[in-house]
Every structure is written in structure tokens, then in C-alpha cells.
Length: 161
Image 1 (cartoon, helix red, strand yellow):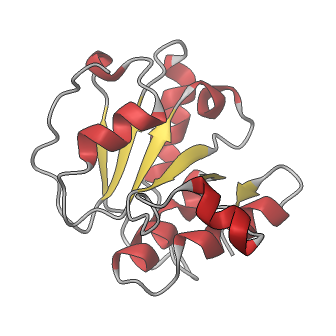
Image 2 (cartoon, rainbow, N blue to C red):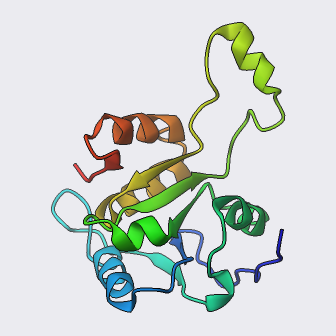
């Protein structure tokens, strides 16, 4: 795995979005515009987002991104603007879980229970990013709950309420 740049200066209340696809500048600008819009039930909350727009991250895999950001103790989720994001009508970002309690468990553990491991990622519309980040940051909602909601969508995308 390659070594990616350290992320510095992120406010712990800002959602972290890392751009890994650099083939469509207009699509990226659409993502940025969506991410910086006020949010909340009535649009009363200011958007706080830390954007990483550095070609050093080009084509980074979700595993590489997770490895690079894991040292941030105040981070529970990272959002990746990848190729799918740039080609999606919804500009759906990949939300990646940093807080897997089951990381060290053998997959055979789940076979014995008849379960599968909890989801580690899901797609989310930019307008839902702030709600996901805020709720995961305060442990109000589990990552798995958001992933289940996204999987219930016909396109597999978490959308704002």
C-alpha cells in the first residue's frame, strides 16, 4: 500500500471528504456545491466540511483511505468522492466506517452465528453527509443503521430525510 499525505487542520466537527477521482472537474464541483449547502430539517444548520482535493489521493482505494485517516481519534466516518461518485446522478459518496469493533474477529465467527459481518461502507447523497457525520460523531446512530437505510433505497443511496 502506498503512503498518503497526513490530513491536518481538520475541525473535529467537519465531515471529512476525500476526492480520489480526478477525471471530471465539473462533477467534483457539483459535489462540493452540494456538500456546502446548509442542512437540517429547515436548512438551518451551516455545513462544516473538510475537503481533501489533492491529486496525491488519486485512485486511492477505500482501504488506503482508511489506513491514512485512522490516526484521527475524533473521526468515525470518512466520505470518499470516487469514480462512482463522479458518474452517479446523485453524486453519491462512499461512506467508510472507521469504528469497526469486529475488525479483529475471524470471519468464521460470523458463520457460527449465521450472520455476516456488519457493513463497512455505503453510498450517501451529499445532502445526507452532515447528518451521518453528526450522528456517528456523537454515537447517536450506528453506522450499520445508516447502511441498512441506504440498502433499502432502490439505488442503494442514503438520502436526506
